[in-house]
Image (cartoon, rainbow, N blue to C red; front, side, top):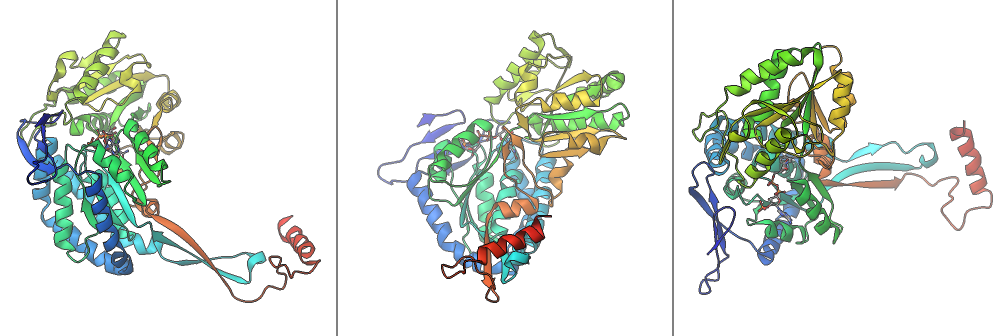
Length: 504
Ligand code: NDP
């Protein structure tokens, strides 16, 4: 038996030749809550082959046929929300209602993907233009085949399901590698799909550590959807580059919330504290920075301090926030708080003493030099840095001065949409926080070190397809330039025609 960061790995027994296994652990108590196989490259290859075999029948079902099955799965998920929420709590430690909320979003997205795939992806006619009038043209969006989905632990259902459900609705099979911290959630999702859709084994599971994820990238899948840290995202891209496997990469963030002089300060304070502290700050679109216009900064700071100061982390189902799921992150959080304070920042709530593994109490920092890691790197803990700016435009400039570009929020009565459009991020909520994640028709994803490609919405459906363009000759062209039998004057006449219709 080998000890790892999270529990132990049991190596195979020579007589049974079974896969080695690893433990899944409740971060609140250290209790072992599951044991899962550590799949090697051969086993990953087997799951990919099984998914590929099932995929063609799934694709042949068409949109309406797949919708029926996906609807059956959705209804089963809706019925068993509390059961799956219990597994999420056991593996991440998050409060029960937060796990339930995550599943409400999952169910909504599944409903949207199944209900809209046909409208977005079906074959449609496109205009050919005057020069190609002899052709009829269509475009349709066909499934890639088998999609490998690699997920994180912080929203172990919502995040990967943003790829899984859209890929399945588009006609793909999926092989899912959940985080080593949340394999039970992955197992539950795959088992529930098998129960609701017994005739189509198009959703397969592989479990293990990073090596299993790397094996999935190399197993002949037709696309990889990765969600996780920027560093791992780069490794996944490098592995996929070997075989030119396309990727969608959803990575970390350092989201900012901008508070303008005319903002509803109570609403802004509420949103800032929820955005920063919910899920113990372990949210890719969590609020990590607040830029508030100087004239209203004191009042906002008072409100944030008052709200954050009341929150208590704990292991009980009704706690405000749970533990830090991945213990190694505690050092990162502590490091960012230390760095901010040593550079001259001030703690208005909590401080270095707030880090009490596996819990971290809320920390509100202010007047932190912009080059501090608390403002440049993803903290992924229940901390927030509130900075004063001259005006909202300076807030936008500082928010944009980041290598990340995932989400953002703006609180302003007069300039909300105008400021939103100036932010170099994939998603913005005006006068709320993270609202975009709950709107299934909106694409989700970032720029810069936050990754590229989109899940959710019509773009998220298309992400898991390849467009196929088809032309059909309706009648013979009078001037056919693409034949060795063309006359000498053909191309000249075409040039004249082009000048006439396109040269003006
Ligand atoms: P990691 O990058 O550590 O891991 C993500 C997944 O990749 C895990 O399943 C992991 O497996 C796997 N993995 C690790 N190494 C490799 C490899 N070489 N090849 C293939 N797969 C590999 O991220 P976390 O799980 O810690 O998740 C937290 C991060 O995710 C944060 O940065 C957060 O911001 C980001 N995130 C981004 C979201 C977005 O939509 N933009 C949403 C949610 C989170 P294992 O766990 O077994 O190591």
